[in-house]
Image (cartoon, rainbow, N blue to C red):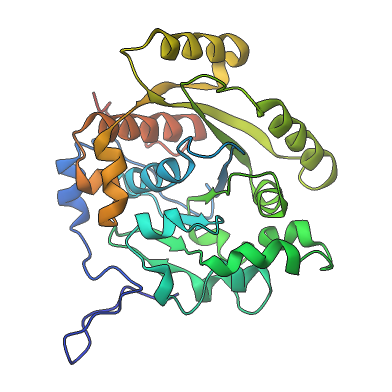
Length: 307
């Protein structure tokens, strides 16, 4: 595993890694993270794929910020950036232009996953980064044996190291997303609270059924997350009601609002937990982390609520 580099002798910093490691306890207090996770990777390994073929629904934002809050609560987390755009990579403070290894090299079999994993500024939050090279992976892997299970096999070595692995998918249902579904225990689907929110969801669910039948019988729908909620519009509330009506208990109670601060944070290479934890978006992802930990059995029994 490559660690965040300290300044080089001439004062220049490794631009591929965050240069500062935050005080996790101080950050958790600032974010008012009062719940704790019982970290025991060998007992509570959990792989969660964040997917929706629609773009701009908050997949990367969710992977980054759910991971950051769980790490602040004491979990060991790995975020895998499976999107060639690399938004989760840059959102966690890494410059993909200066990375020596990435998830592309792992999928093609050139290196082991552990060799490409990078630390971030948040203790216990690691990332398997992406570069633009990943855009060609689907073509290169067309003739590869068991191409749909490349990621699943690659994770077998690092999976026991982490309580939860979060996989951020591209906005498509291609080979990269299939790899993510084949490697996952659960699927988290972010849905934007806007018109056409449910468009294409049926196709995603049909793909889940195909993956269950042929690659990963244990895959389940772990949750649906409503994002970009604007309480000023009647449409947003109608979408919330419609999604809850159709999917009932699988929908998270937490609703992520539209938030300027959430949009700004990736530009500074920070999760919202560090950038502005008490903003509406920060509080929403903190609540989501608590709800996720409670659903999956990660929540320590002595926890207190965050509200």
